[in-house]
Image (cartoon, rainbow, N blue to C red):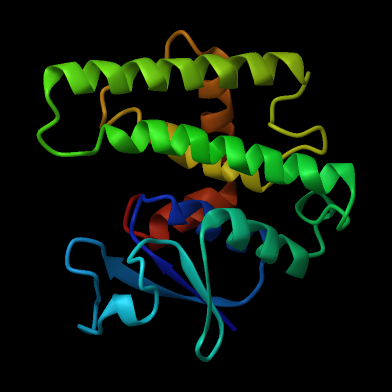
Length: 203
């Protein structure tokens, strides 16, 4: 059974959502990112030396990290067609492309969580966030769907929605990005997301 190492509300929430969507059996281990420990006091760095979430333990001692690897892996275990485009296909490459773009947006938002940013650095970070949000809005407008890929809801949507949820604590106004806000809201209204939020103590 898969074990997901997560921190409430972090980008690991995307993996949690997709695991719920697939209905695969899995367990949860909460990680304190500040101390790099699990709830029982064990050293998380012995599981993932980079100290980040998510990580999944596939079998004893076999750990996979990074959403761009974890989300397709979970999809391959599911019976949901949109989650498992064929290896070597253009659809598969488009999914990986979308996940890569999610990580671009993630990096832009993530810089704003750095403590004690100077006003100048904060302004520069906001410019990058704005650029990425404009790109996201254009992408959603151009592809003619409510989601990032033509097949409908899939792993990149879960990851992007989680990243967009950070706009509230970061005081980023999404008013100018109605399609991005709609994507976030659609994903967060899904039963799988609501169940993940409840399990992580966020709802």
